[in-house]
Image (cartoon, rainbow, N blue to C red; front, side, top):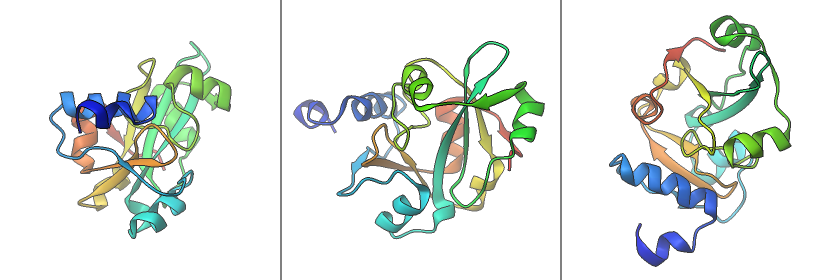
Length: 162
């Protein structure tokens, strides 16, 4: 994607696309016809297993009000106690906090291209799959990657957080 194609995309998708291009990532964001605000909706739209969706969950670290991004498989539930043990006590992040810290709305939070750099953890369950898909900055946008690409793109550690 380049030039006018990029400028016709929503701002959040443009930000994600630039990060992917700068990193030499082979897959550009793809716009879907319908919104995919949940992992199941995204999996259905792509014709893949819900586990192949890399869902981005945002928490608020209580000690410093920093956004904490946990990227996990769409078929798993984050264990907040495991997250807290790794990075300090967290709490729920409301839609206003998510938008302010990430620049994305809930349902379109990408693992990359955040407005403010979050603390990031990647759940090891994603490594069950060769290819996964993540939100690309908008509820209609996704991009393909490998779990190893998440490590490269985010610089984040892989942990047991489910």
